[in-house]
Length: 329
Ligand SMILES: C[S@@+](CC[C@H](N)C(=O)[O-])C[C@H]1O[C@@H](n2cnc3c(N)ncnc32)[C@H](O)[C@@H]1O
Image 1 (tube, helix red, strand yellow):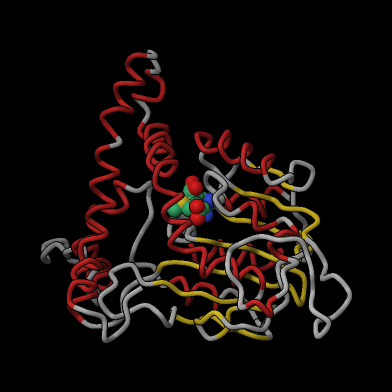
Image 2 (cartoon, helix red, strand yellow):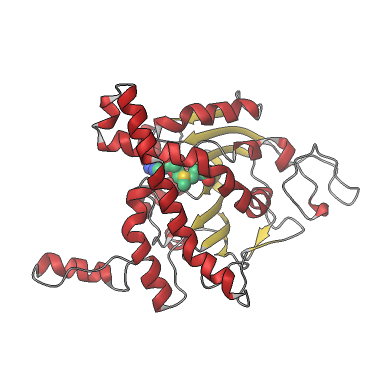
């Protein structure tokens, strides 16, 4: 990962990566359309929402393993509780994920194996890493096993990823623990399926960028957490580094304000979207690059502890910067 003193090539790579994502996504569309035509799946072909799901699922199944590879050095320690102030730390700063868990937007299940004890009941004295192993806690650690994950609700609205998700749940030996909830997170609280203050942990990994009305829905999920419950987040967020990075990634400062003004004065000039985000949501299943997800999480309700920061090992030239951390209710 690049640092502030990273070579120019690294910065150039940072600028180019989003376009490679977009191109890969675009290239996955023609084979999908051909497949839908050959299988006479006109229902999907002619429905924009179903086509969007099918497109994202095809792209993500191919791309998600590399996303996991690039992110696991952060996400594995995060769920083990070994992340603090935006950095991975040797010793636990928070308890690991445990008890009843909501995983928002698990997609094809890239992270479900982390809910097994192989990962979460891991001695942190080795400095972490992503290799799973059964618990062999050192004598300096507590001799009692930490509580394990007892139940997971994987809330995933895209039906096209469910088969892959269930396959990975089974492969992780979690079929009795992990329930796929085939709806959007916005429908979870209203459904009454998960009572208020009944959840120990929420896990959101690269998914709050795509949920509707994040301010409202993050608040609704907050209400499902027990007092003392924890939200483990790893999300990409809007650029704040400089005007040029903001313009490259997201809508220009004050655009929302202008958009509101435009409703009142329709003749005012149309606002420009930031360059990448002009295309990104259309090519990547509705994912928005320019969300202030840190704010949505901080303002979801009263937290007793907020340890959520930008990743310290990310440099200024990333148009897809991340935040990482744990919020405790
Ligand atoms: C970029 S993918 C990330 C998937 C997975 N967390 C990972 O890291 O591999 C975002 C996921 O969020 C899901 N998603 C979109 N809208 C959602 C919603 N309203 N509620 C829950 N999940 C949603 C998408 O279907 C997709 O699977």
